[in-house]
Image (cartoon, rainbow, N blue to C red; front, side, top):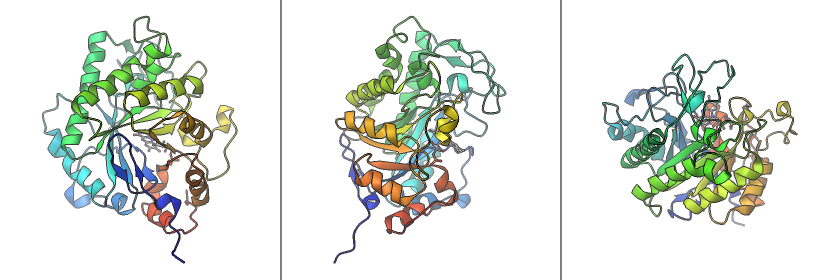
Amino acid sequence: MAPQISPLAQSVTLKLSGKVIPNRIYRTALSEYSGSYDENDREPELADGGAGLICFGNIPLHREHLENINNVVLDRDQPWDAVEAFRPAIAAAKSRGALCLPQLNFTGRQCPGFLNSSPVSSSDVQLHYCMDKSYGKPTPLSKPQIRDIINRFVWAAEAVVAAGADGVILHAAHGYLINQFLSPHINKRTDEYGGSIENRARFVIEIVEAIKSRLPLDRYVIAVKINCQDFVRGGATFAEQCVIIKLLEASGVDFFDISGGTYEAPAWRGDLASLGESQPPAGEGTFLRWARDIKKILSRATIGTTSGWRDSERMIAAVENGEIDMCGLGRPLRDEPDLPKRLFSGEKVVSKL
Ligand SMILES: Cc1cc2nc3c(=O)[nH]c(=O)nc-3n(C[C@H](O)[C@H](O)[C@H](O)COP(=O)(O)O)c2cc1C
């Protein structure tokens, strides 16, 4: 009898671009905190480990609006050649057949105060002390400033694609600027970027539309990491996020990485009980119960969810049952880069984390 191929080792094709992800494991975005590149100090293990899709950690689009020190930055006004700077890292990520999607981000009000005490946001709702940091009171973005940020997303997307990436993944989760537009608790605008769901979604939809006008969807991937909900009182709810995800799918988003939480309630760390939600079984995806319902309303896009996956049997069940298409791994791949290969071998694996 032919040996059975693990459901996690089977490829999946992104429908719009036609790009093939060779298996069901992706490395979700993990902030690099290492804004330099050393040819003699590469980390080839990430590609060698076998994940079918590698997302680079969030890349701020403005040098004065960082997520943390030592961020890798893609600022249109920088003096260096972004394409040449990114080419080696993207080549390394793709060297074993994975797709590569760098994550583009604008921090907004979650920019640490010690880096910039005058952040920007959808409106002026200040973030209280959390995640061991304080944050300045944000200035609401004017419409020309919104347009400038959209142009920064486009510029950065074109740069990483010219450097060899398969497209980009937008950071619409975890309380950063796109999330600050989506959230009714933060977005108090009275113009066309605030109020109704359609208005709050306008910023991210305009980013997708602007990117796809330069990078055709039949050749390049636009993916989005997005919350199933914010887990914050007054924040984006699951029902609202479903509407937004459908709008994004209609605009051309080909892949969703489902997460949850903001700095005020960092659900992505996996402790749902502290947020008043029931905890999933050990080793199962933190957001699986929401992601499986989102998959039911999607008509085309591929979907994965990140956080909490530690047990191969839970991952196989979720993919085999068609609840989701892919499993995203963050911290486990930092500690055990060869985990995907071991998952594909059929070995029962429980991450040491
Ligand atoms: C050190 C660290 C950095 C992170 N940086 C990012 C990031 O840049 N972008 C992002 O979307 N999520 C980021 N996250 C969240 C992870 O992508 C992921 O959602 C979270 O770690 C849960 O997945 P895991 O349980 O597999 O680690 C980060 C998490 C950690 C621990």
